[in-house]
Image 1 (cartoon, rainbow, N blue to C red):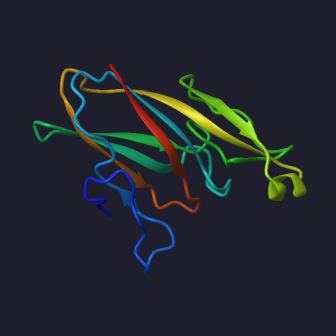
Image 2 (cartoon, rainbow, N blue to C red):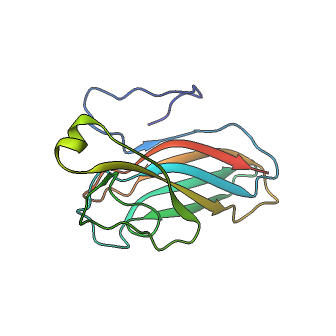
Length: 149
């Protein structure tokens, strides 16, 4: 679903969750790193399942895809006392923890992950980035993205 170059997007009435958000950023020359703040909404997918991806679009028409995998880059945003607590990617860490009444009532905490990806073509200018669901059982989400020079 394209967001027409705007900074926010709205969901069509026929969809509960979007399949993708396109054109998330504006051109950035020489970006070498992509940092995202994100999580997953379930623990139903087996470890290693591709739950989402970032599609980098370069100004010369080339594309690159960065896969986001369950247990590698993210876990359920509800941190259960006996649930998984660590991801395997060394460039991913728990960046935020918190609580809300629903999670507290269930004995869980909340968390978001920060993942740093390397731009596979840092010599090229990134025109835009798409966040695309892997259409797995869970529903991954991204809160923020920053491009590093």
